[in-house]
Image (cartoon, rainbow, N blue to C red; front, side):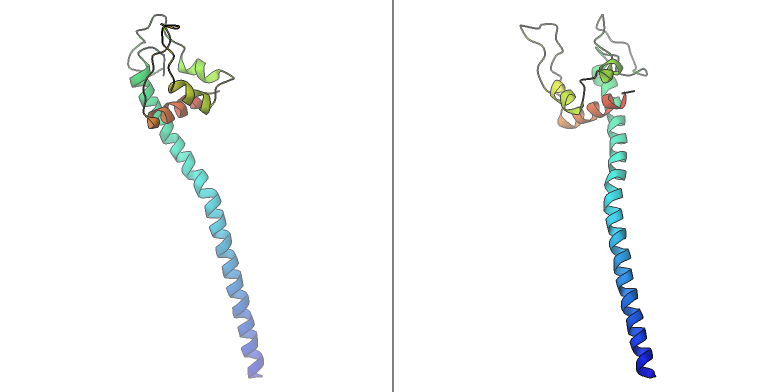
Length: 135
């Protein structure tokens, strides 16, 4: 009788161990799937906030970058508003990054947008802000 109980307890211990390993594995898989999305959302929110700040400080000279910018554009007429740029159908992160990092003003286009010479983190933040304005 004692051998039967020991083998039953051993069997139950093995089932419990397998169950715990399986549950632990699912917790890890769930965490790996959910955490990056959650972190990216908070990073994106922070990028948008930084982009808004940069746009109102660096781009508001020529553009209406935000409704709450501290002053009106001095360019008359102003360059396209950030909101109107965001609504364009051909705009995406790659096209905005390309636009913000290439030259638009030259002998062939003297009134083109001057090259802003933004750092990579500034471009990333301004792009996040512009894309956040999409409706």
